[in-house]
Image 1 (tube, one colour):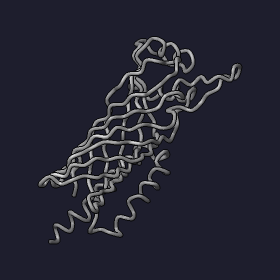
Image 2 (cartoon, helix red, strand yellow; image 1 turned 45 degrees about the horizontal axis):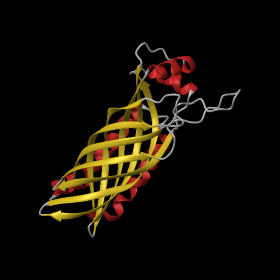
Image 3 (cartoon, one colour; image 1 turned 45 degrees about the vertical axis):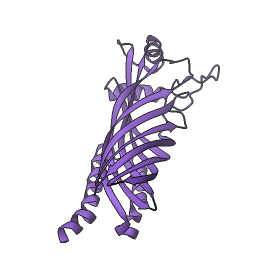
Image 4 (cartoon, one colour; image 1 turned 120 degrees about the vertical axis):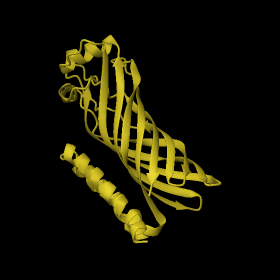
Length: 250
């Protein structure tokens, strides 16, 4: 009984604290606001301990940027990953599942126009016209689930909002190149949107898929001092992300 109490009560908290430590250790300045928000979400867990389950989660991302901007008009999907922690509260066939994830989202800008544009305006040195942009974020989705039980299996649909906080990024694996581009064409530090998906839960295991629609631009508007036209190619882009993940529930 004591061992079960330890695994059910303390192990999820230990995993959660270790996850926070690793993220904060990498980027403590950008994490201040994210950490406070994440802690606020998880603090109410002690109110109804017996009704809650915790979990750890890992998965893959496939990201694209929807754009109608002719400055860079050839954007292709690229793979990324996510990992983090979650908690779940079930009631009457419904479940509420907030999550705290470290998520890397990548796209490929694969045309010569992209290379020429960023080289000219953002001091990007790129011999290869394929430019891989990776954004590292802390993401907090709130999944509202509804499903049915089929024997020991719980099948559900899910949807809900998310908010993400940009920590940094890289271009072709180089952080300094990303900083050069960000200095000229600043990326939005906060993103938000809506997602929908489905999943299957069997005992302590959960497999799910979710498609997220970003609602605000990836980049901030940057005006040309002469024409006052926007020069930031990322201002017209909005994130689209498909994630497939596996979770273990305590």
